[in-house]
Image 1 (cartoon, rainbow, N blue to C red):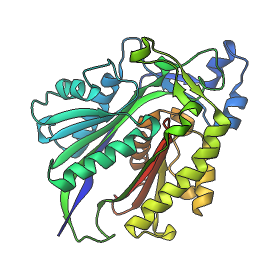
Image 2: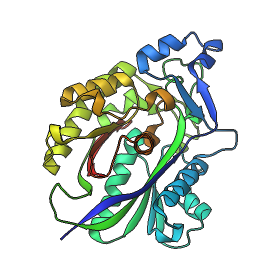
Image 3: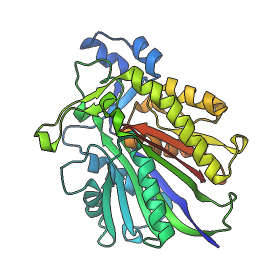
Length: 323
């Protein structure tokens, strides 16, 4: 028998404040039509004053526990993917652990920006396969509204806040692609491209900084690298294009999503799209889209799902799983 990391619960949380594109028209030289045509985004959610990344993560985590019918102490570990943790330390994951009342196991953060959730899934999967843990909560949570330059119309209209969570559990499988759970992982990074997407501040520079992005360069790298990593992960899993039920991509830009689907030879009918409602929520975007996709009745038990993401670093990767 082969051990597989199977999704047994999921949930998400979005802050109450919804910000339509029209809200930016009063402060920036932009319009709803301009934002929609270039990104596909219509609205996003912003965290309230005093509402932190760990707050969003905790609510998504509790919803995932409820969905799975589990208690916090049924978990062995919590991994939070985020670039916007509440504090320099301790980790957001330990804050979530405490907020849930979990007094066992371990918790830590993973930082790979928009690819963070894919990296966190890969870490959780490896720990389950090695026997380090039996059940792990993986959360993507961000408050990117806190690192926006509100005078930069090319970036501040693109991002939103939110959180999504999945619970992975060790289950026996046959060792072939018919198994439920994670079937393959592909991770990549190239630090030579750090200047096209970064935050111009940090702890060692004693500043918070703002997000900076060269949009055309990011787009150029994104479509090529996302299609390649998804193809590599599918090949590792022995999954052909026609066997894929759903692509659940990082929700950054509808043009990137469409371009990647075309390169993979897949229809947009097989893509879960939430970017219009959430904007780019960085590490939260894939788990948010997974949760919404299940809520909509799109993703069903037994479906083959391909997730892929790219973010600052550059860091990118993909995970293939059977739901």
